[in-house]
Length: 331
View 1 (tube, rainbow, N blue to C red):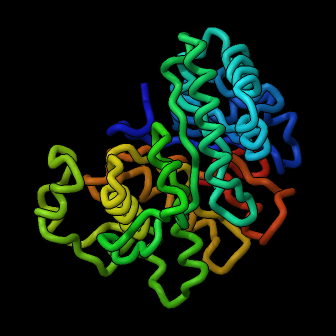
View 2 (cartoon, helix red, strand yellow):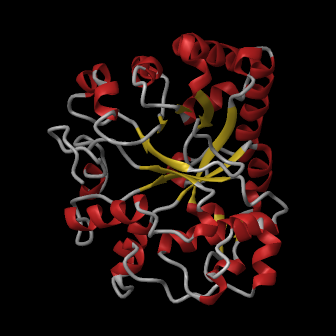
């Protein structure tokens, strides 16, 4: 069964209907929609509309990361009883498929100003969730994570200089799996002088890995490409993964306990958001060209299943789906 963190690896898809024009219809057909794509890991964002049984209705889904909103995080932090209720609800909704619920994502991007939740509140929610899970032996396998933006890693270039934002070190230390949302797309959009091929995975970035001594101090050599010190990284996403691992190691955290909570490329809405670029990005992700072997131990969740026409913000926010408005695969 695909897992997350601890040398587990795989590709997953984020599932949300919050800003979809046909949210209820899509929820009713969640299993069929998921089976239009090859992913066995699914990440959700809330507990509404019976999303858990809807997703687990697909026999293709082997691992579900259940999302809890930032609003829930604030409530859960206040009392173990609230965490008890949420855990009980997840167990009830999953039913006989509980073993396929492998993790709970506590909030999303609490380190971002627009979705900020204080670290102390997140830590309290983590503690209350652990207490609630401890009472339910049938849920003992469920791991806890807190998806952060890439801003939790500072000084990320060159990667060997990266550090964890000190504000969030205790949270990353307390989770079972470190989850970071990394988006090469936003770098390409904001830095037009950078060759777009670096972000799309069609050309290597101008960075060479440090000597083998540095590599083996951070990674188990069994998971390393023995020739990697002789050539460049494969893509901007690869660079982001290296920076994450260097920063975690520097903070005294296990670098092999990492997943990407979100990454992707929209198919419209900006000068770099085109269908050919999206296809290239996903093709290079899924064929292994996007990252070096040393980073193949990282589970990566692609954002997202379907376009969200009602999502606020920039025009490109509407086109992140791997399914079109007609619910057919773009790639």
